[in-house]
Length: 65
Length: 198
Image 1: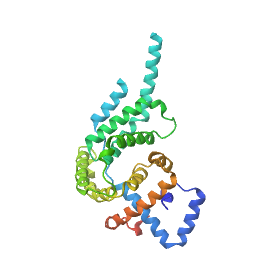
Image 2: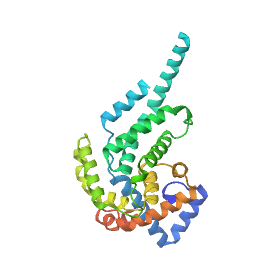
Image 3: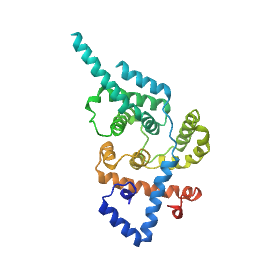
Image 4: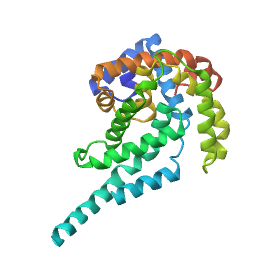
């Protein structure tokens, strides 16, 4: 299930899963829940920018080393 | 002698350019990862700085054509383990106050950036998600973070956490299940419930 959500299944595995999901409401609900969890994380976790001073010091480090 | 020196400096120049293009572009992702590991902006900066120092030193050993971000993350993770293992939090123990303080710190940092204003109210919603993620056992949290937030493949994650792909797969499955239980109310409240799955 996780592998399907992450696009890590082979084409054959994916086809088998889709066929099963068509027939099984329980797995279908679980699949959607799992996918929603991934979407929530992607959309809702705060991402910050690295401080400019850190970026400058790393660029300088690579120039001066 | 002079020619040698010139040759060396032009090689060094190529290395610098490549390093900037390949490695420095990932600085924001590395900083975020370091923040989540250390929960402290100053430690995170140190960790990123040390990671880049090491990465530059060993840049020749970076396998060209592979994912440089994954290579950097692995160096950062190793640095973190060496440096902070002593102070690592006990497994299963969650310090909610620390998470809350940390969350507000990064939110403040974010409000210094240009994207802040429109994101501010979103950030308030994020806290619940962040706490849920942080409250997972580390082995689950780590793979979820690397997969869902950083977008690494299973193979790259397996390499980073030094476990077989099957283990990564099962940790993701079990971790997501735990997370889902914690986020059930959140999902309903914010329109992520099963019915709106599409």
